[in-house]
Length: 123
Image 1 (cartoon, rainbow, N blue to C red):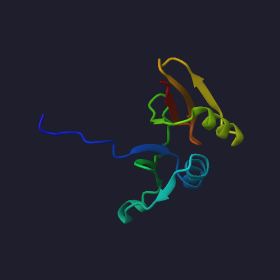
Image 2: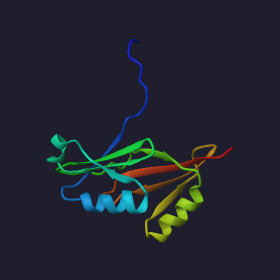
Image 3: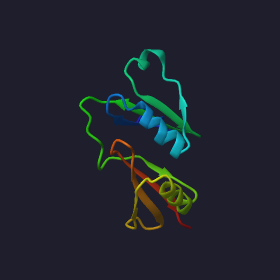
Image 4: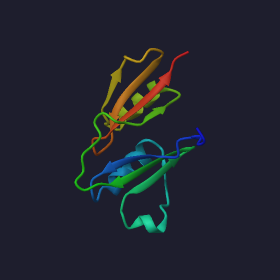
């Protein structure tokens, strides 16, 4: 194959129209991402972009909106137990999943019902 895939550039999740502030509250205030500027040409479409380290999450406006219940990004974390405690303190529900050998993982729904996975690989 002549093309080589280098890395994942970003993840895009959909959200309903007018939901940018809810996205900011969840991804920035709860998960610790910081907002980054969208290119001027794309600002008129709505939505908001976030970054944490090399990970970018783009929230795009979709009308009509349908949340992703099965498809999801998976974020690897260092201490999933601390994340569980933090989410509980923020009144955000999470669900344990023990079906992946060698990993502790949970599922969370963003404010729009999109599924998010967080996992810690156990050595």
